[in-house]
Image (cartoon, rainbow, N blue to C red; front, side, top):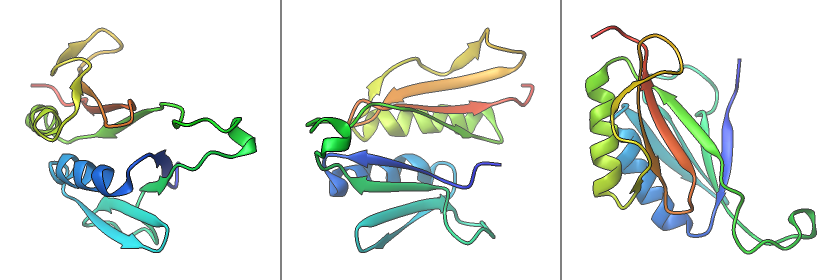
Length: 131
């Protein structure tokens, strides 16, 4: 089982505001610590939340890239309505559309929506519940 995922962002404050709004649709909460912002389910019993934001800084390891490499993040939801709310909230918070809510052909009952965050990451909400 995956413990947590961390991504690098250009503007930690803007990304924190964006993800706090976006993931509130999934009942996630945000905490800030020196050098890292952690976001996770408010009912979590895990020692640390499962999503982290850190400031991107160029380094030799990434060839001094001025932007972080985009990633694909997916968050499970319990209902299709949460997928719809996730998408609408993301767009309202400044995300770009990358595929509105709807059934996908990936597998049965794959109801998902996709937005691009402030750094170009593809962020998905997906629900497998039947309608």
